[in-house]
Length: 253
Image 1 (cartoon, one colour):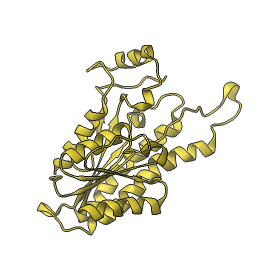
Image 2 (image 1 turned 180 degrees about the vertical axis):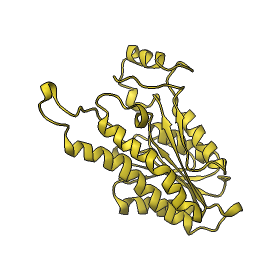
Image 3 (image 1 turned 30 degrees about the vertical axis):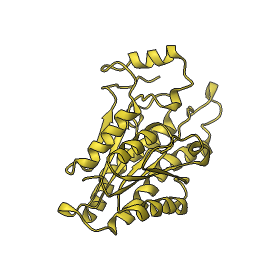
């Protein structure tokens, strides 16, 4: 699928993976609506072809507003979900006393999994209303999981559950939307050098990089963006989860 003359929605688009993806898709000719929270948009870079829209991915009405903003610019063909949160928490506290904060667990699943599905569903509805292209294709959805979906570490029960859910819904949603010419794929990144790691000391960053078999470094947001573009332009890739992790397999802790 060619990006020129199309529009795209990218959640978490003000920084990290989302910002890199928004810039990549805009450079390829798409009119991009980058969705994020107000505090993130305030710090977002000014990128030609990228418009920022404030929205919470857990709010269907706000997601619909963002999708409508993209559809007004050009037929919506691409939706990429990069918005997500993650905090550590063990099932039981020290000495086996106290359980994981259930509200926090639900919040992480709501943002990372339910939010991703909300964007997928609302974007798919808009894509299904567009004129079909070659072979009946109408659009592409790219979701973001994590290698934690497969190799969750101690303290990642909530995060891994949310990302495992994203992986789990990839094939069935691709099958659901096949009749409308909409493909669904997922990227499961490893350790990426995003703002989330900006506060980590250089010694810790070096140790994280050393754990990656090859290339022995942290991944870059632009590499994620490059993979998104490849998925969009590769018309036969559908229902697949792709690990982008330098063959890293996480240890228990």
